Length: 348
Image 1 (spheres, rainbow, N blue to C red):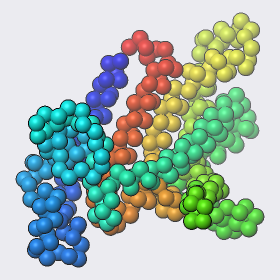
Image 2 (image 1 turned 30 degrees about the vertical axis):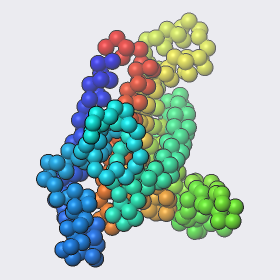
Image 3 (image 1 turned 90 degrees about the vertical axis):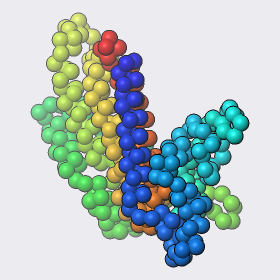
């Protein structure tokens, strides 16, 4: 448990460092009031905006207010104009301690709360990342087992070459190749669209039209590299575990071959695979940016790139912080899974 506690404190420190860095960049890259005003940059408008958003406060007060806005537990006295609802817990005269949604402010472009914009796009990114990781695990682990059990023979050689090619190819190159091959050249046969999203609003029924074919090519493009890595890790880990003494002892006792592979060898071989899969799942959330742009996928990556192009810094900061928090949650979840699968970690 000490390892989990230290890891959690370390990641909270990293998240605080990220928040501080984003705040300083936001203040140093330009005058926020001019970004908000846009073309209406006369002195009166700028003064009104600075007063409304408390940009005329000292930088230290602005920083404390920003931390207070982001925190789910904060003091209302230094919380300026909230962009999302909150719930009172304790009220002390003019101030109070409250639990609330993290307040990421308002978008410069749409004037909508940033957290609402992120929550609208986050499901698309998570669906794409999860489907890619499910494909990588569902194909990579069985392929790695087959390669290990056929070590030195033709299945092992073929799968090793495929894994090497998959690791070497960047996701955006694979995406362009898949678009050309299956959406353009063979599009009349496959019926796969070049761009699109998983669902779209139907103005007639006030519901949604689902199109799961739009998920196939982005999933393949995003999941090929983690699939190749998981295949190689599963193969090497299984080869190592199969040479251990307890496996040879089980074979000598006449234990069923299926039981040895799937109940004795595989659980111990999966520890490095799970660690790598968690890291790759976190990496998918950053690599998905290029895939979302190429396939016009309505997710967090496309939202982040749009915020960067339009200098919408509150939205950009909110997207980066969201990804950082997801990284932290994934890392802690990985530690819990490794703790559950590896009895040796319970002794530490």
